[in-house]
Length: 482
Ligand code: BG6
Image 1 (cartoon, rainbow, N blue to C red):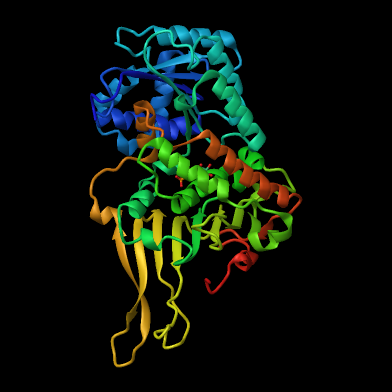
Image 2: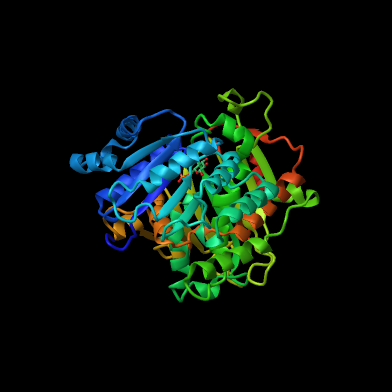
């Protein structure tokens, strides 16, 4: 990969945020170690910790050694990595600090072109994005004001706004400073190997796509379960809740990948067009059908978490039934359940097929059908399994469900790229395929807003830690699948 990339500077706002220290710096270091980065690159951290360059390097080094010691297997490379880190100390709302940033950027320190290719990375709470963007423009660092040849791009982390209104406002502010082709709204789920495999599985295999519709598929279930709680992020969770934290982005992006039409080509716009069409077709929630489409839950003990208000009605679990009103999916329920402090950490998508019209070989000789399923394991298992019925050995004609399974780790050896490796490279290379376009983000928020409006005032049902969520979640599922 070396040689393909332009020389560049990444400017990270919130350079000592958890995300930057746990994900961004280790990913940049590994890309460097694997020689994926160009000859000249550097990172400028922006924050309010009052560091000199040296103190900043030391702080990042200490945290990287604490969080990912296993990745530091080449001391010389590790030392070289830190020589490329710089720091600008400023409050995000102090325009003077952005002039200092400008000077730091333009001081190329003898490296070719580093100042001309700029990737701004907002690893900050969403409320800070507008002021940062406005100050970038004030210091001539906006995307529309190139002072030397090269490119400028901006990566914006989730949560992307708080609701449709704030997301639109953020889009408006961003677009005053950058063109859409320069804006990278990141959802790290789209960098996961098995998520990227969904399109490959669907569109490179002739045998699945003809069945991928309402005629053959009875239902789709998407599960995003985590056995841990909110991990000290009480203040954030009180603002966000699970619908905004997980469903608006990761959940709806998985749904869009499963439900999209084949794109006209593999360009970023063609793929994002199809995903956007799905999100436009998702039926909005209404209070009348809410008891058949939504269950919200909150794990026992959530109130005792740091930063959580007593009596909080924030949800840490949701089970939803989505309907997609288009020709391919009309009448096929897309169930989604996601939650914190559940029995197990697992993300998977189960596609359940309709039963044969006459069922001669029901399970244990009965007329009931064990439907075929395709199970896409996203994590921790990165697998694709196909479930079908097989004759149990013996004189009786009894059918048992069996599985054919593909496992990434068995079939492909070697060190893969993590989502942040891949998405950082994509952003530097200018590939927007796995970033979310403005219209998609707004359609997703419109869906979430409809859920929140329909459920306004609802109190989430309590559920025990390490369970599978509130029992009533089962009521929204239709069994047997139709
Ligand atoms: C983040 C959410 O976007 O994704 C977290 O804010 C969640 O609440 C995390 O735990 C899950 O990501 P991953 O890749 O660890 O499954």
